[in-house]
Length: 153
Ligand code: SF4
Ligand code: SF4
Image 1 (cartoon, rainbow, N blue to C red):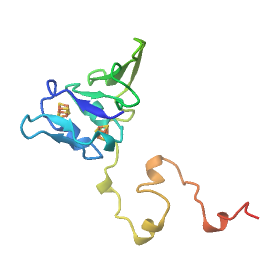
Image 2: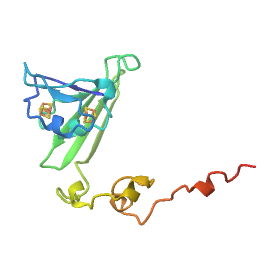
Image 3: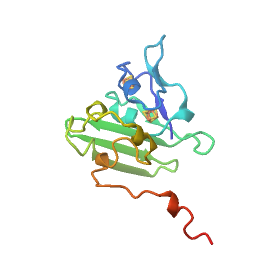
Image 4: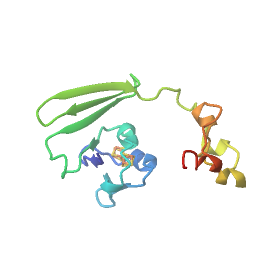
């Protein structure tokens, strides 16, 4: 479900613009409020929803398979360190979830620039950047060319 900004709640702070990995949260030049320029390119990561201090970002299903009538609202409470989700179904059922804003202390994650620049061999590896260290494991199983034909008679 992509995101939707209530312009009357948005104050144009730009946090959602900064955090969106798909670069689809933009500030409208006339109204100085955020909006999702391309909902079908939304990763549905909800980073913007969680980052918005004004609770201005809603989550909506595509109208073709989720006709209007439901809602997903989020409440970020920094003092409590929690994010609460309230899901209301079209038939009136309601579900509430509460989870920590994050499970590690702020600032404790090593930023990309603190890692060594990748070597030429790293680009040939099946591992993604910062793997396996970033996953806190020693190694990932990898498929080698000699294993590709296993099982083929
Ligand atoms: Fe961008 Fe993720 Fe928000 Fe979609 S849910 S607009 S991809 S930050
Ligand atoms: Fe508006 Fe929220 Fe985005 Fe700030 S984070 S620009 S208040 S939608």
